[in-house]
Every structure is written in structure tokens, then in C-alpha cells.
Length: 175
Image (cartoon, rainbow, N blue to C red; front, top):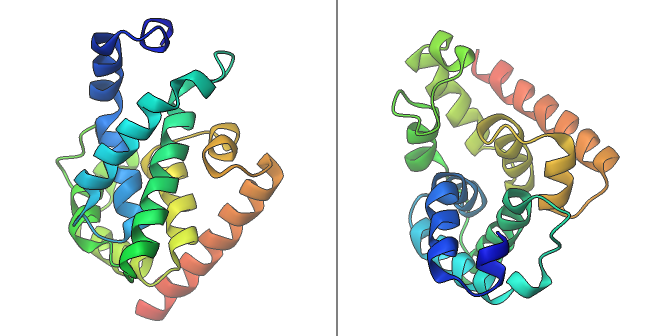
């Protein structure tokens, strides 16, 4: 990170490669579709590069970057006036080809269960999908989520609890 802040494009390229999958998942969740996620991530990388001077070295890079990605995706979504659907990308996020490695929970959940969860998740509002994705897809801590969302940890915790409650209602409606 220090090398990237000093203007080393190669070091920044290493950061890009290391966090590309996470950035794509977050962009997809915010957009509600995989369509356009690559473009949003590219824009976010450019914004992050220009904003490296404002990055605080005492903070972790990943939450800061995901905050930039989420904001870029929100702006893109607003400008295009899209409504959300996560199915195309979520199938890859929850499916057997999970890029960051399958967790034990992923290995237990059947394909049918995944589809039910994705369908229910798609019916949630974008802020609910984002908080769930940050916690369970990206496995961020509450502190890291607070940095990404620019909210206090207590607010993040309560928003996650409410989002999960809404997801449970949607899943029960399917049952």
C-alpha cells in the first residue's frame, strides 16, 4: 500500500488483482445484476487510484476500497435508473465456483437451497442485499462493514439484523 501511495502503478496493480473478486461481488450486489459490474469496478479502481492520497494508512485497504466500489456502484445505478436483480452474479457468488474458496456452509447448502436464497435475496431492497453480502459473501467484520458503509458499528449490526429478518420472511414465504 505504501508503494502504491507513492505512485507505484505496479504495486497498485497487485492490490487490484488481490481485491478484484471482492470488488466485483460488491458492485454486483449494489447494481442488482452482473451487467455493468466490470465497468463500475474499473471506475472505482480509477477513483481509488486518484484518491490514494486521502487513504489513511492506519486503516485497512479492503474496507476503504469496497466503500469506493459501493459508492461508485450506487452512483451508476442512480444514473441509469436501474432496479435490482442479483440472480446472474449471485449464482456465481453462491455457486460451486466461488472464487475465494467455499466455506463449510457453502458446501452443505444444496443448489436448490441456494436458488431459494438468491430468489429471496433479490426481493430485498439494495441496502439490505449489500449489508448481507458484505457480511456473508465477503465475510467482513462489523468494524470493516462500518468502514465500507460509513456508519457506526452499532448501526451496521442493527441493519444486518433487520436485513436478515427480512430475508427470513422472504424465505418463509417461499416455503
